[in-house]
Length: 389
Image (tube, rainbow, N blue to C red; front, side, top):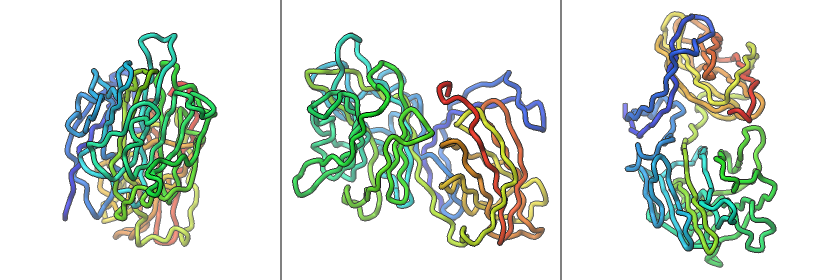
């Protein structure tokens, strides 16, 4: 079976198990950063992060740093607190394939040595098909506007007759004018120049781009956009990265963490609309970053399953074993349904799977069943406080 290898950096909390039920001790918890090469089967597909890091010293070889960008301690510094700078950072291991969509989440920090002075000019998350050496100008260029065929989500911190100095713009390259066209602007966003870390989650699926800022409940921006057309990429591949710039106003533009994940396609042999789904029950979790594990707790008889969480296929065409298969996920909104689908019924029908959900505090177990006509689902409800995430 052919496989591909991706660099995977996982920050995971390893617990000491004291019970076969639902609780893990809070003592003995340690954090480890693990870098491995993970083979990804082209038949069975599991949700995998192409890139996941919160310490950029560990993965500098995967990044192309251009212009003023550099690794400063554990972060990417796109610009220093100096006038007339432009910098860019691209994930260079390979282009992402966004045929079925992608998500990217990052944490950023905008700050100044002199907190009493205004900041400028901003940074952008950029999708482009040109090069990992691309940069695009100082000042209001935000480091990307001289890069052709791109889509940019701009975090603007200077008011260039735009209505406010704290807003986001979604822009794309117009080949006729050879310049960027503003497609959407949002002024009602959290203050991003307060010297505190902020996170953003970008989801692109089915031609819709959603942007979450400091919240997993509701997107601050949701628009229809044909990214492949705008970046002139018929094969639906692109380079992902960040750009930033300063002018007479300036600040540090720091990237503290970053993840990239491609979405898996819907399994070809499952017609979701034809399956009767029954809710088995619900569980409440206190954190949004979860570890889901699945395994066969009965006879190992060749059960092949897929799992869908909300709109995303987090595991497809997977043959269950007695070993736990681990899937890191982020819970969006108030609640999401985890649905089990069967591709066969093995030797002993129906397909059975044990699902454990670990939220960093406790582990909860549920058994789900599915056959070719019906499926069971688990509702995962967020019961925590987003302000303490």
